[in-house]
Image (tube, rainbow, N blue to C red; front, side, top):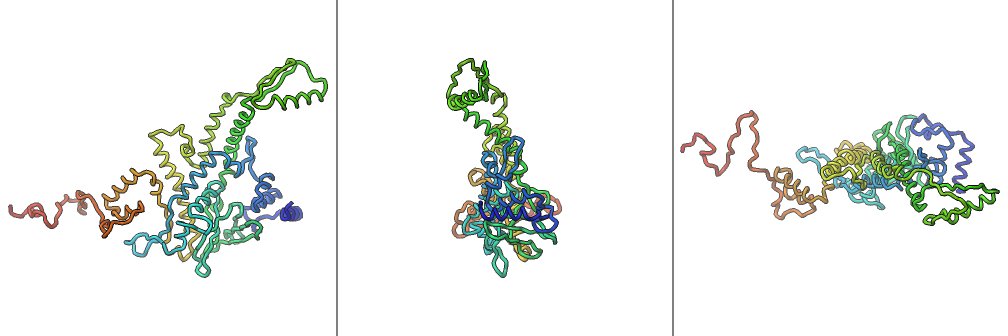
Length: 458
């Protein structure tokens, strides 16, 4: 056995269970049993298989044990996690700063290290998409996502973000009700990071839906009954085809076996030859082959598998058509289903990223300098050329953007000599009089005096 496991077991058997991971009154991580201490320790130290063997996963009513690995083996769970994580990862995220002059609006904060970190690479080992995709997946499945913030000494400005496995981090509150993170990576010593007021934070923590505001719920744990039923249906179907499409059966015999040895011999011979899939049994000596149980049609296995898709999608807030189920999708509603995913599911995850980055990454001084993060949802239309062109035409005709700004959205160079910097509006659009009176004809050079001055002579 590994020496660290041996020492851990001996210390746990010798010492009474502590009241809290921080030694103080904490309702979030109170440990009351040897089993809870042991399983959590194995997960934090990377012994995932031992963690699962000791009961570190939820047993569903179907009898299937559901944990992160078994849940991701189900295609619907994998697809829901992938569609959310990948979509959040590829949408451009930029860091902005609102200047002191409101007329200039928001400017790209290109001088801040986090601008390049979250646009290109937050550390030397990952791209920006890979980083945000990974942390979003952690939060989608396990309810929490963590990253260690590497700051510049002296100023405290964030330089890098190093992702952490959720199983490596414990969070709670100390005696002073300060938020505390305990990080255990591999065989290294535990590190404690305390969130202190008016000081930069060391841990980026994005939370999913929770009940106390500091820790999110694990969807895998909360949905283990639904996922367990879906896994059991998949296993039942796999066993059916593994048996060559045979239903469970029994053998009826006219006479009893004389001895137990005869019974065991017959059973062994039968299982060795006739119970093999795709081999027809040869019955003799008045043996009757009778099927038991219900057929797959009577058990509505196909309907159960289809319902499992909708059931699991409901937990993640993903429309079923995005995971390959087009049974309820039509030409008239497929676009609205996609918009619903963006407005109700994706927008919540994008807002989490924007607000948690502001809360955790910025120093207290930077928070007063009007920094913020925003996602550009135009990336979702990158593959829809007609919709992009229609939107650009509307922006150009109404003076919302000039030609160079629109060309920049397509990664095209500006027009030479500054020709594309002008803004355009329709000529028939006029400003309403402030007093609510009738519209006056436009005045300007080159106009007929009779058109602009009613008192002018004919």
